[in-house]
Amino acid sequence: MSWLIPLLILSFLIFFHELGHFIAARYFGVRVDVFSIGFGRRLVTLKRGDTEYSLSLIPLGGYVKMKGQDDLNPALKSYDYDSYNAKTPLQRIAILLAGPFANFLLAFILYFVIALSGHKTYAPVIGDIVENSPAQIAKLQKGDRVVEIEGKQILTWDEMAKSIRSSQGSIHLVIERQNALYPIILTPKELDSENIFKEKIKKRMIGIAPLGDEVLVESNPLEAIAFAYDQTIKASTLIVQSLQKLIQGIVPAKELGGVVSIVQVTHDAAQSGLVALLFFTALISVNLGVLNLLPIPALDGGHIMFNIYEFITKKVPSEEMLIRLTIGGWVFLIALMSLGLYNDIVRIVNG
Image (cartoon, rainbow, N blue to C red; front, side):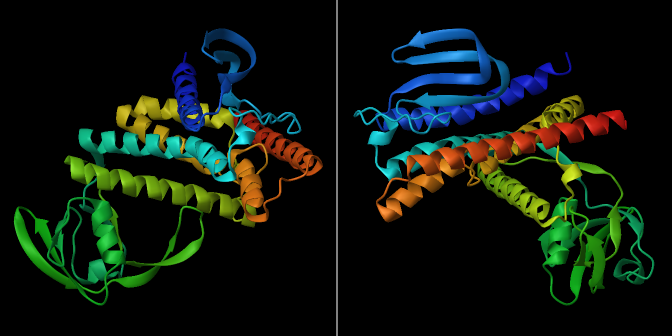
């Protein structure tokens, strides 16, 4: 049953994405024929008004089928007053953006809940010290806790690292050692480091590593809003950078994961506790939002691209071009998913 929680989470994220499209479509008066979670044979179908709500056999996706829109055959169009194609390009773009926006909103809500409930992170307690580093020269010791930098109270390791990176010249620290406070002055250096993509970078540091002690960070509602916004932006930036590095070849294609990797990592996050699961769910939600904005036909971003073209040129793209680009988009997506699945199988075979 280890696959059940990841499956439910994926289905929920897809539902939220499609709900965004559904609400926006209905707001602009577009009839929704089908609201489906999953693809393939329908397991459960419920008709309410003009819409069929379905749960399908393969829950790794979903769709909202609006009147006048058919990804499988872009040439099939309707211009009735309640059809998708009867709306202006800007209205259609708003409908298309609503799905990814729903994913970003969900991630924001999850991060907000995490901040309110409290989450653990590394405390600013010094562990290993690099030889001949500014920290060693200043006689910092293992077990020292950094409580203040330049007059600002420090509660977490991330706060401390950020203050050091953004500093200029020498900095004033206050450290706690054996229940006593000591002022320290030192000058950070540009030291060799690696980013998460294994690229060599220079970073302003003092040459210390965390001891591993944790601290519980709790936030009031205003702080939680700031935390949620910051984390949503960070997650979005990380995913965009990852795509950029993948295209540039800095991240090898073998690192690309498929649905098996998502299920495995979600399962591991669930084993680590509720907060870890919420963090990962928020990251997956942002991931869905960003990927759906890519200008690939068959994705929201591809349809947005077509509507921007129509808005600027006042011309509708030709049916032949729409069909060719849509088929090309599906071929690309299937190839990408196949590569992810292949990488997952290789990782399983190699243990």
